[in-house]
Amino acid sequence: MGPRSDADVMGASIQQPADFGEIFDRHGASILRFLVRRVGPEPAEQLLGDTFRIAFERRVTFDRTRDSAGPWLYGIATSLLRRHRRSEGRRLRATARLASGDVGNGDAEDQVIAAADAQALLPAVADAVLELPDAERDVLLLFAWEELSYDDIAAALGVPVGTVRSRLNRGRSKVRELLEPGAEAGEEEEGATEREGARRDR
Image (cartoon, rainbow, N blue to C red; front, side):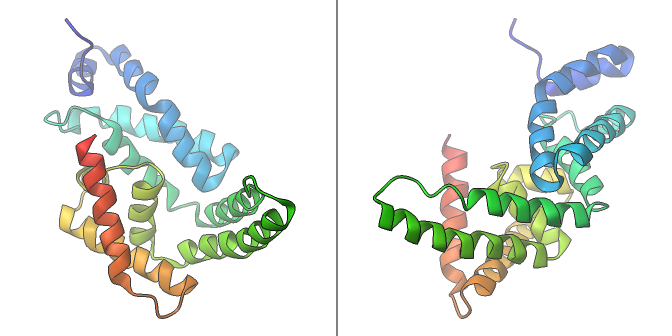
């Protein structure tokens, strides 16, 4: 017999609460990584504990037709993040500054040009993402950072897949417009569709 699915573990944990620890073992690291990227290490540790405490308290409500508890946990974490908008802003800008130092290989002149471009672009991306409404930013980051499918994002946020698509397209278009005024949104929608198709093919 193979390992139990998350749905099986969640069901068993209703009568055997200790079994819920297996859910933390499976998903704790990925949820923590997501939280750290959005608000930094110290708030993330607290939010991780809150996420799994709430999940434990609500485990009876988990939809056991879904094999993975991951999207459900991301949904809880995302709801908690909305109380930490200021911390998220600091973290995104800090991440952008650090990322701008990674300019790859090449000759000295190429590296200087790449560094200048990165310094200008990445903080602008962080600012553009922070300009998005919460709903659009949440969808965009779950898609871009956590590589969740449309269906998983819909499950995480409790909205229809069509809403996920529209929020993602609006968010990507707004970010692109802030970075490149006048850019066509159609290119962004096409890119998102291609990435989603690749995830389904894995």
